[in-house]
Image 1: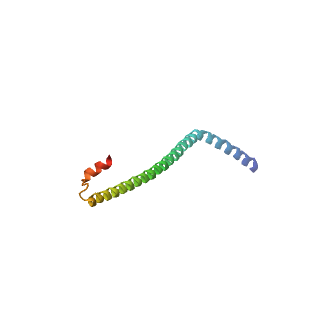
Image 2: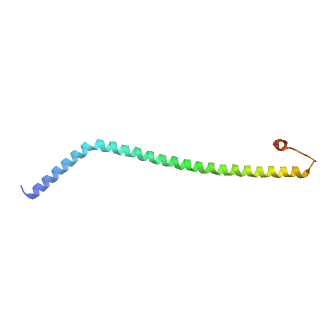
Image 3: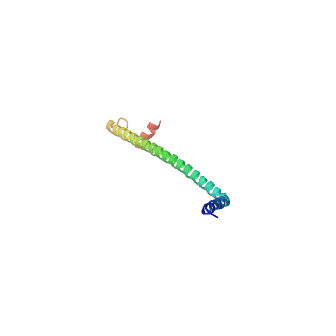
Length: 105
């Protein structure tokens, strides 16, 4: 046998062995690829969920700031009305509870 034929024979044997090896490993590779695909899908959906929750948190924070601002505005108006009722003197003396009840009506 010549060196060229040995190289050709070696190449053929290598091709056959590698083909047999890949065939015997293929089911496991498929399982691994499927598992990797599932994990990547979970990562993607988790990132989307995280992003959605972060947007919700920002919206809630904005709503909380608006409500706090509204409470401050109403508190300052209530303080102003209390001052007015004190300035009026005896014309219309209302206690704080009565004043709140009056404005609720």
